[in-house]
Length: 293
Image (cartoon, rainbow, N blue to C red):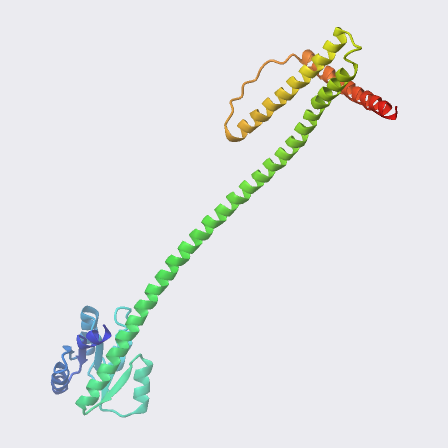
C-alpha cells in the first residue's frame, strides 16, 4: 500500500528560476510522479493549501518571500504543516542548513542537481512521509478500538456488578428463608409432640385401665385421641398452606375472630398439654411398679 502511494505521489517544485524548474520537472516526471510548480512563496502556499502535495521542493533564495519564510508559514498552517519540505540551495553554509531544519524542513539538496541523488532523496522522504501517515492512522484506529473496548468492558463490568448485587440479594433472601424454615420446623416439631404425647398417653391408659373404667371415662380418653388427631390434621394443613405460600401469591382473605373463644381454646389446649404430661408420668410410674413386681 505504501509503495503504491509513493509511485503516485504529487510533488510541488518552488523555484524562481525557469531552468531549474525545467530540469527538475523532467527528471521527476520520468519517475512517474505528478508535478506542480510555483515561482514564488505566495503561490507555493496557495497551491499547497489547495492541492495538498505529498512533498515540496523549496528553493531558499527567492525574491520577495524567501524559502525560509515560506517554510515557516507552511509549518504554521495546520492544513500544510505535515507536508515534508526539502530545501534546494546553492549555498553550503551550515548555519543556513540548521536554520532551515529548525523551521521544519526534512532535508537539503544542493545545486547543481545530481538527478540520481534528487530522486533517491525524494523517494526516501516520500516513503517516510507515507509510513508516518500510515502509522498515525493505525494509532488513531487502535485508539478508537481501545476506547470502544474500554467502553464495552466498563459496560460489562457494570452489568457484572449489577448481577453480583442481585445474586447477593437473592442469597440473602434464600438464607433468610432457610432460617425461617428451620425455625418453623422446630416449632412444628414441638406442636406435633404435644398431640402425639396425648395420643400415646391416652392409648396406654386405655390399654391399662379399659376393663376398670366406665363408658364415660373411656369416652373422655377417646375424645382426647380424636382431638389430638384433629390437631395433627390442622398442623398438616398449616404446613401445606406455607408450602403453597412459598411458590404462589396467596390472596389475603381475613376472617372474623372471636377473641373470647380463641382464648378459651388456648387455655383448654394448655390444660390438655398439662394433663397429657401428668398421664404420661402416671403411666410411667405404673409401668415401673409392674416391673418391680
